[in-house]
Image (cartoon, rainbow over all chains, first blue to last red; front, top):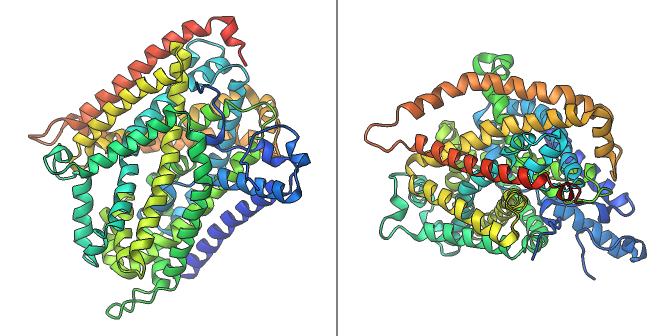
Length: 49
Length: 544
């Protein structure tokens, strides 16, 4: 493992982890976020019979 | 205490106890991040990285993540919701509404054709995950021990890679039974409208996959080198994955290879599920005040985390320790399929508790694949409903027939996975670039920066930087067009050669696959023509 390899690994892992943690913080700290956030399959397609 | 994922009565949250609100929000995070986790994270990413410069791959990957992944996710969610408020749920309808011309519907056609055709082979890969989970449960795969070639033969036999029609030969139908089972599960869930149920189930199953991946990661990070090969240690394995490989000692020469940029951008499309119409359809069902900015960013970041942190740290370092650099230097051993279904099983087979972790890993990957395959069906269901004026169940039946023909075609012409590779190349590489570029152009230039930003910010739980519209308007399309043109120049001559000169004595599978793609495109063109007639009705147009 070279120094360049360590730098790439730390930047990539740190960047992705930091972004995810920021999003989690925003969801947890924003009042009412649970009513406005959606994942695709959880969205009601309104065409059920 | 119950955990609600999202939606529901307005203002209810204000009346809930604090602990329940927190559990609901955690449920939302699990659902949104879980929706992004799939085969691309654990199987495709490490192989792409290893084949394209190791750690150096992360430069085009991170660039594509920032200037294509996030902007395209935001564009697609916003464009879909924009179309939905005008009564359209299919990509053709949304494009027709935005472009204000009937012909605009044909621009959006790829947003229904691509998911259908990708589904035809994705369900086979999904079945392979279940098949491997089953064979870890029954002990077949663990029985191979450290015999690398035995796992390779099992993989080739499972997919029938040796001969066309091998899966249909007498006594070879076990894997085909798993394909049929997966096909049935998908269409049963979508026919009965149970996709929300499976999503709620997966909101718990996907964290389990991540926990399982962390356990495997912990095991990988504590692996000791084998006595015979002390140089194949953890640090060397991490170096194999993360060291920036330099051809001829030049970083710039490696980065100037357009294939690396295409691979990175393609990986972003594939793993974020952006650029091929899925998000466009689902977001069209959202209300005007629903958030799209934080939802999509959470999904994208959850995906990136699983991909880089877990996908990047598990497969290749472990494979390096057990199988060595010579084995991994062969590109055939680190492709998407071979890494996941040949290399990883060899790693599990040499781990304590390998049978349990192998079963759990492949079963949870199967669940992740089910959520993806289910979402691939909705875009065309929406178009069939709008175009033919039929309800959900007949739409599902028509779609079931089309996809069944496609899956049987790909399963039959299995030698060298030629049919699968052809459909994958044209859908998940070629057309996805075109449709992703069209989406950014339509959002950035037709809707425009002012309305586009207002659309993205409506109901947003975060403040979106205004500069994003500059990125969507100029940088993303320029990047996509440049990479696409250069890549076409490099790759299309070889593909053309494969079309014109099939192997002697074998059926022209590449040409036949293209014929099947053309049939599906023609069918949906007729559906859009019918839809255009129906959409002329102002009452239909104004539905919201």
